[in-house]
Amino acid sequence: MSALHAAPDIFEIKHNDSAEEPQLKDKYSLGEDDEVVSQSDAPQESDYEEEVDESVREDMKKLENTFPGISDRFRLVNRIGEGTFSTVYKAEDLHYDAHKNDWDVLTSAQDSYTEPPSKRRRVEGEQAGRKKAKYVALKKIYVTSSPLRIQNELELLHDLRGCSSVCPLITAFRYQDQVVAVLPYFPHTDFRIQYRTFMVADMRHYLLSLLTALNAVHDHEILHRDIKPTNFLYNPELKQGVLVDFGLAERQGSEYASPCLCTHQSYARRSRILSSYFSKNPPTNGLSAGYPKNDSRPSRRANRAGTRGFRAPEVLFKCTSQTTKIDMWSVGVILLTLLGRRFPFFNSADDIDAMIEMSSIFGTRRMKAAAAMHGQIFETNIPTIGEKGYSWEKLVKWSSCVEDLTESELQATRLLSGLMDLDPSKRLSAEEALQHEFFTDPVHHDVKWGGHPDPDDSAESAEEEEADEADEVAML
Image 1 (cartoon, helix red, strand yellow):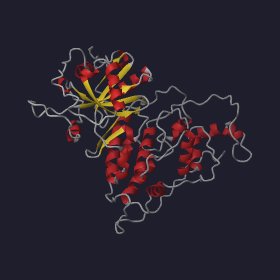
Image 2 (tube, rainbow, N blue to C red):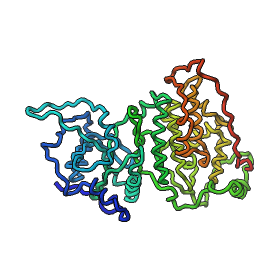
Image 3 (cartoon, one colour):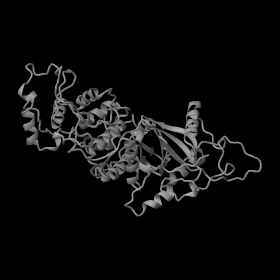
Image 4 (cartoon, rainbow, N blue to C red):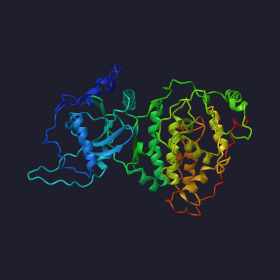
């Protein structure tokens, strides 16, 4: 069978200006000179059987047949993830001992993780104490992804090597139009179990690991763009997680578009709003009847990549100057999901529904101000949407169906208000969030969901007065 080569050209992780890069290729690439593991030495497929659907077996067999040499290096075990642009498989690394694996910072995670009992048969004369298998994750990137997108993902993963709580890239291979990235395998629990059972102390460890990863990513001026629970693999036993899937990530400022109005001073924004057509021709009844049938103006284009329910308001308003703060909004949505015990918390079908969901929380007044910040107009005639909106404390109470929040939940709610600010300039960064009292001075007053705090320990806190922000659309 033909050998498996490291991905050349644009897919090879190589920079000529670094003196240490040739060592990376020697450490992680699997070429013709690699020692081939014989079938007698390699664990057989019957050694560690897992419950695998027949369709998954056919999918893995198809990958082995269409990607020559991959079965000599890895033994596919199961399919552990499937998305729009890629499929991820759990595989055993048959050549683990033939390489210097300084990327393997999660060995303790694999060693402490209890594998399901083996269903193998004991062969007569077999030696006992077989070496523990080492697993990796093989990410098969679909051919529908553009070569530039694939190159961008691999380069960003390479630049983030060594960052805490960020999944490192081991190597990548290419055969014709197929690309497979090799990543560490990290055992984790399903978020659908976590959000039902997590107490506030568990939320603190979860967010601490996630924000640590984002702080490292944002220090490199990289936007992840797809922060959500399925892209953060968390192990509650280790209190550690890894951030994965950089398929939509990009460097900040890589969009070559005109700067958004939010980057200007407030007086410049007011001037632009006053000179707009909407300001000079206000609707007679106070609300616009609709939009022009034949609008000759060019449509506004901006990056709207992300997952529904986790997109920041500036993404919905098509801001052309998006920053790393869009990831912080997504972290706030995860915290809101954990506190409110509802997943998914936002379940919109499109961007319009998403803005309606936001306006139900923030009110029309703040939504209009947020839209005007990006040179947009927000209008709605839904009678159930008020002008003022609701506080996060009330929202968490209603969502989790409790009468009172504990002191630790109130502290987490204060962090939530800093993460989910409509104004990205006022939203907490990852570094600022790590300095919040929720982490630096935690309140250890926690009860299981559905319980009630002790009356002696809990104190009724006055509802936070909402700061009156400057309403830039009042003049409209």
